[in-house]
Image (cartoon, rainbow, N blue to C red; front, side, top):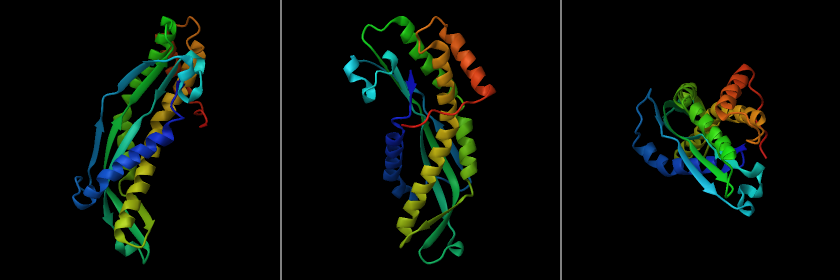
Length: 228
């Protein structure tokens, strides 16, 4: 069983809060030069927990095992004010540089005494995410390129608050674009993998299931699961 949806809102909020803590310094001492796109890809991390049934995440048994992932993005920007395009109460900024720090935390919950077949199934979800994460750099660069030169309008009574608003809006836009591109692969292929393997309950070899899942997904990407 796989899942990344129930935690997205919290993860995005934490990422935006972390960015907010550092962006005031970025506003006064920009670390990015105009025209720069900088992508940093951290190594994926995996955590395995063994829990009794009453301690399942979100209180859901999820077919006796559960793997959670999130493709995290912490963006930073440099802006150029465009006062000639603004007016009283309206500030306009151009995105002139973008940096993105990417991470992939993975966490699996397994029951005590887990059968090896079910363990291998959840490890398959992890391997799929790690394989997809190899595309993170190119997908992030695509997203950053699409942000470069974009004009962001913010209504505010003062320039400082307006600049903070521009950071918030740019962060939300870039994070959503990146996660939509990469999560759609993980979610769609993960659903297919669960179907092929019956959530680890049949005899299909995991390596073959992974290969077949990606092949089926790339032929016709299915809709991502709806958020709860």
